[in-house]
Amino acid sequence: MTLSLYNTLTRQKEEFVPLHPGKVGMYSCGPTVYWTASIGNYRATFTADLIRNTLKLLGYEVTAVMNITDVGHLVSDADDGEDKMEKWSKREGLSARDVAKKYETIFKEGMKKLNIDEFDVMPRATEHIPEQIAMVKTLEEKWYTYEVPGDGIYMDTSMVEDYGKLMGPNYKKRLEDLNAGERVDMGGKKHPTDFALWKFSPVGEKRQMEWESPRGIGFPGWHIECSAMSSKYLGDQFDIHHGWADHITIHHPNEIAQSECACGCKPWVKYRVHNEFLQVDGGKMSKSLGNVYSIEDIEKKWYSALDLRYFYFMAQYGNFQNFTWDALEAAKNSRLSLIKMTQWDERPQEGKNILINNLFGKKIIEILSDNINTPKLLAEIYNQLNVHGSAVYPFLRQLEEKILKLGLFEKEETVEIPVEITALADQRIQAKKDKNYTLADELRNQIINQWYQIKDTKDGYEIVKG
Ligand SMILES: [Zn+2]
Image (cartoon, rainbow, N blue to C red):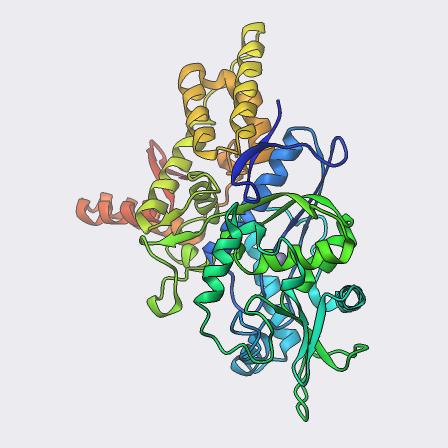
């Protein structure tokens, strides 16, 4: 079964053919670690993981790289403004490096909660400054750059014949429109789309993050790290580059321009895969609306990060997904019912069941191979369980282990019940003895709301998760 992926470069689904048979190199633009990652950021991390896991299920040997941007980006995309890392360093009273360390740890803890394994390499930008300087030097030697005195080294995008091709088949027109509409002060830039490769530290100012370079003390521009680190770990050309749809107009065209000009190879990456935005209540997440939710916010409302994981599966990665608390509640309920459906008595496997599992496996491979259609994947799992019951457990177990990772098949007795929950249950038993049924019901609701179930037994009660 061949995998088809939606390629942003061609704006169509394409059959995936790796550069080297059986092997895949994949790079994802990772988080900037100056703030707690939001559930929107994690949709991108989830997508990267999903693509990797699907490729592995299909039998590919995958090397997956996701960078950690721990060097300060500038607040605006236009290569000016304050440095985010330095700004947040002041806010938190920590050094810029400690801010980065803190939020990288938080980011990786979130990954763990979402059952996302670390990627094979998670390189930090600050640990790859020489590689970035070397790439800028190559671009300079090939005459793709110019210097804006007192500012930095810039990429001259007018020298790149197909600059912006990621914006679609009519990208030249789109760029013209973009440039015509440009009202921003270009500083010393020659063209609106030109971008900084290396920024000089302001004279007389000591930055927390700055490095020596052949062109003076400074820091890298915000696109060069992905180009430099991906070629270090995956070679000059590799198979899949993934990131947010947000990056289709600036960050990714710039990466493509740098890499293709530096290595002289085209295409740098054949398959450009993007996950769409996660909206909240039908709109953009924004700090001013107070709806930039983190995993911690989810947990405060007694949801598990795995409910969020289930929620991500509910939309195909290339489509917008709308987060509401009701939608998360629906995801939680669906996950719980799926968990229950994996707790049935299992009958010994017979010849007929082997056939059922093979057909189930074939169907799932088909669904995943079609641009990783996760809503269809969930529907098919329910369908199979409803029709065949526990007979499909053997394949479902494999799917859980390799793709779903939703906490299915977990034996209830392995779940430790917190003391707060048993305390509520004890109070409920007392309330029942006192014939205070209103209180007993209220306590039961409190237990259920915290994602546990209570069953009455002849000796008292039994609590199970879910
Ligand atoms: Zn990137």
